[in-house]
Length: 436
Ligand code: URA
Image 1 (cartoon, rainbow, N blue to C red):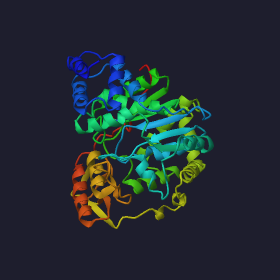
Image 2: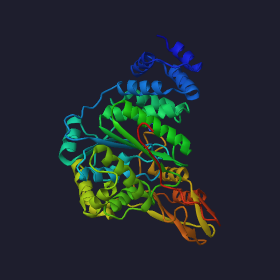
Image 3: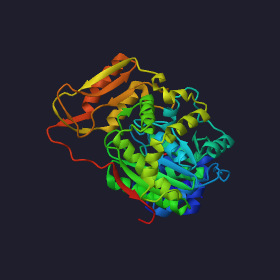
Image 4: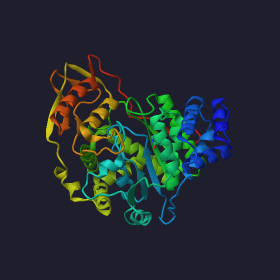
């Protein structure tokens, strides 16, 4: 087989066979295909697309490019949750202990933040001592004993995706639906959970800004998961403004702790309930009409926050921070973002808020960048709020005064204030099950 012929074939909009895709991924993972040929293929895929069968074949080839975790040592139906990424997205921190406290093993693999979106691992590392570098045995043992473990992506889990993603990042080929679906699902399938629930974000802070694209991506991933024999569903949720009030690592951890203690922002809790209900229903632990109630009871009974503290401790973190959030590192400066005029908050550009957080040091432009956990933004006013001129819209938390001042200016621009009240956006836009 020659890569030249496969590029030519895709360039002419012909479908690649399973054998051709397997060969291409195998050669690429081994380092036997030059990046320039793979880049040409990615661009051909970007413009000509992959059909459903090709997308599935690519996913399976990437899954098989490295190790697949055998979770058969864990008793019960194992669940996993994945978000396509957003700003202020702390849902995994809240949902994982809730599901575990309800008795369902959560074996989760999480990532770090890159660009304007945050990552669960960076947030968890706000707890001194916390580690996601768990060996396979430790990972399985933790899920068996406390029903929850979160690990980082090991070097050999879907290594083809890791290499391909790096290439997509520099060739402007990230935002192609089949490439996103196969990238996410190859890692989910390699992990081996029985139930996979996907949070597909849509809006200004998401990869898929249009609802129709988010829906197509959700359907594609659900269909891949289902074809691979996993119970899979997707919830399409709003990412047109940041989720919750906190953006920035320790600020988000504190918001998650508050949510687990019964004081979560309404939009955050709506997403937690929707995704949690899907996990409980697919795992057979609840019915449609009692799933949300079970989650609420788990929080009010104190089981959720207790499980979170148990989990932090089990992965080496200082769990005293869970009950004493004042211990988290504080930023030096707290700066007010004042409303430039009176009116309704019509829009808050999620992507811009994420970029402001990154500029303050709360995110990474490059993989090697070191995160400052204490910086970020706390939004007091969200879409639909009426504000007076000079009223506080948000606070910026910074350790560098001039960066803080720039952040305040950028935050003012990320708000759109006008005289008309905006239409109410629904947080949960759709739920996609298999065969829909
Ligand atoms: N997250 C992934 O893991 N892969 C993508 O392609 C996009 C988001």
